[in-house]
Image (tube, rainbow, N blue to C red; front, top):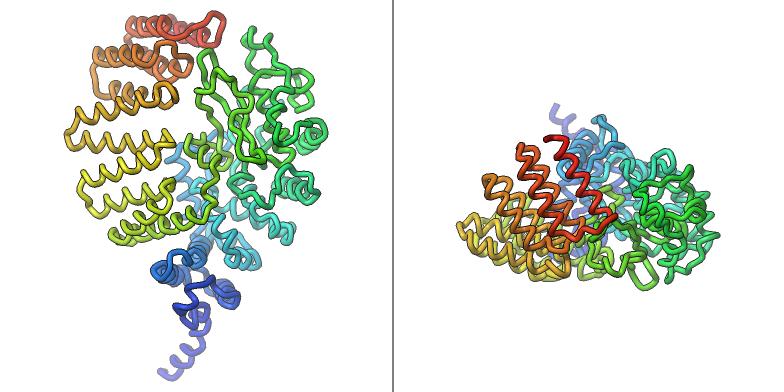
Length: 596
């Protein structure tokens, strides 16, 4: 019996350990995994499953990082592929659902139930595609840098497989375009996309067939008629090309009929005649019987139609475009952004007198609003630099060390990441998390938060976000007066240049008052905010301060106080006769009369 066991063991060993045999030497750790090793690994994974190898590859990645962080990326990404392929489908879908719920990213067009199927994610991909993925370090870096926890895992990998199966050579040539389609088309778009001022009957909220979309833009590029070289753009920018519900026949029409060159694409906005008669009649939704690009050009429209037309005309030519919406003094406006030959233009069609107004734009990858800093990061394009890539590797290993409970190593890696590239947001987040895990003294953690605020002060929403943590820590230590002063400083800092951020801070103060003060205290806080921030303000202040407070009083049954607060706002804000703000004030007043 012992002899038989010995024979079986000799037979099994080559199957279970050959993929990492011979052991990875220190010399091999200094270069990407060899083709022979990857061939063996993929072959072994088809027999034994990827789960057998992810732990070994993770340990190898740590060895590579500790030897030379700059050369660790290929081994790290190989480990990430193995871990991803080994993840059970049911676990991956449940993790995704949890991430969507946490981010508030669900919408009416998504399924109400998702099955938790058996098997692992590796089953979504053919061995040929698995081998291509693990052997392509450039795409691997892009994939894991781009992938979000809000990307539906089965659908994303399934789309990659579908595009690869349709044309492997074209996929290899336009892998970033394929990735862009996979992360955008994994779930349906929301019901108010690309904008809510046209009915679904006229503009169905439906993305095109992914293979057809891939072929449309790949062929456009191969014919040398795309405005950008699409093979040179990353998926993080190409996702703003493929996010369209406009039929390809209309996009082809735009290629023929929208003539401004790329450097002057902003002129496409002004090709649409502005319909002042619709604004006068408060007709903000499209009144026509069709909403094709040709119809919009013929009939004219308001700002949202101008922005939609220009954005789609850009996508038709392979230009990443964004559709912005914003609240100004007198009403809501829409404009568009596009990637020009010299960089991003974020204000095409934006009124000069409303330059201070913040714009909101959807990220087609998650269908949530892009934050200010995300827009700035897109515009600056610094995440493609080697320095940022090195910082990112340090950050990734800091998070891995945190998973292992090694707070000291995580602190070292996160600090290195922040020092290498101070604009790396995840590095600061990892550093704060590592300090918390290590039990770093609270004043030292506050010093790190202050350091992050200084490093990221170019991005006001990030400065304020770390500032909130700083203020919360001060309050926790009983430094209430210092916390109040810091909070007011942040609100005043952006009062003139960034009204939206100043209002965001004011809204935080109001919400805290609603949670902690009695009715008299809430009214005093509201009046103070109105006096401090409301003089001459417009519809954005109305949305963020007036409406929430008046609605709160109405729910509390404080109707007289609600009416007085609303009338005080009417006297303080810049309300012009016949404009949208006046109409919004009147509508809110009507709700108070109904409840009287």
